[in-house]
Image (cartoon, rainbow, N blue to C red; front, side, top):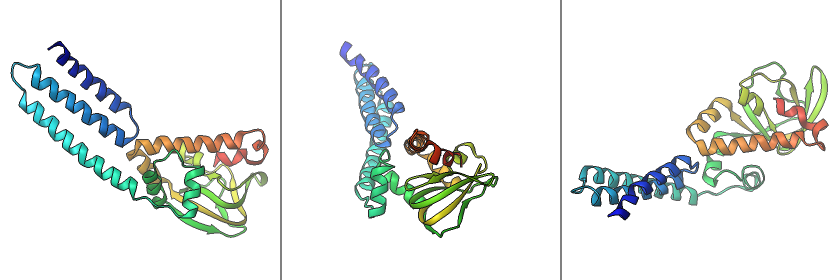
Length: 225
């Protein structure tokens, strides 16, 4: 009987682990095992089986099992274009494939002509941009301070701080980029903690790249938009 009492500790530990997990799939898997441990405890330890508790645990197991099946189906059916695959492998590898697909669906691919302004100093930014291919110049108070190339983000610091653009970004050659509406992106990340965590890594990696000595003079100020 003493061994059975361990079931309640196992259930509590597994529940604690589930709360710490960022991947929703593994969270649901661990939750199922926590429910199983709870069933064992409530069936064997009490003077008689606590069927209301046991039945509710069975319901929780069934719900999580269905959700696991849905997640696996969603993750297994993801296909990327050549451009999307390149972005996923280089910049967004911390996202699960289906999470990155959600991010792509939220954004819009755009093409900018030479001379087009992506941001204007002092103005509110409505979008977060990622330069896929091209070149843009960063101007602060009328002076060029940096250049942004393939894989550079524009507007990520404004997204984090909800501030205005601290510089103007002007396209120097035909540029292809992705644009995400800030409000929609913020709402999506708020609803998906694992995506929020992965996006933080993308922002951090971009900032680190801009702050490295090799690129500091060229691209540092791009992180301020």
